[in-house]
Length: 140
Image 1: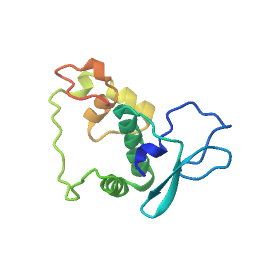
Image 2: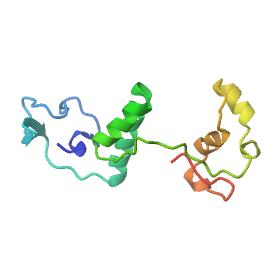
Image 3: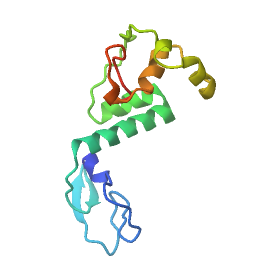
Image 4: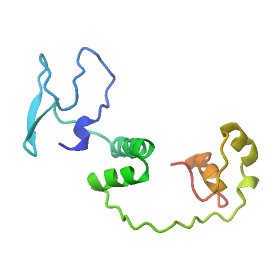
C-alpha cells in the first residue's frame, strides 16, 4: 500500500475514523492485497505533493528523534529515498558571521544549548520569504 493510503488529510471525526489499513465494521472500505496482506482503505484520495512531502519529512524526523541518524537513513532507504551510507562531512557555505544576523548568545542562553555550527541557528530562525544574500538557507 502506498504511503498516501495512511495519510489523513480530512478533519478528525471519531464516528467515521478507522485504523489505517485495518477493516472496521460499519464502514464501506475497499480491500487491496499488498505483498500478500489484505489492506483496507476508504477509497482513493487526491493529495497535494506538499502534503506527502510534509508527512515524509515528519516521519524522517520521528525516526531521527527516536532512533538516531542511522534509523532515519534506513527509513529513507526503505521508502525509496536512496541514501549514500558513506557520508562525507558536509561543508556549509555560510560566509557571514552568524552573530551579525541573530543574537546567538541570547538564543543559546534561552535554549541552554551551545551550537558548534552557529549558522544552523540562523538557518532555523530564517523564514523562506526572508532570503537575503548573507543568509543562504532557511528552515524549510
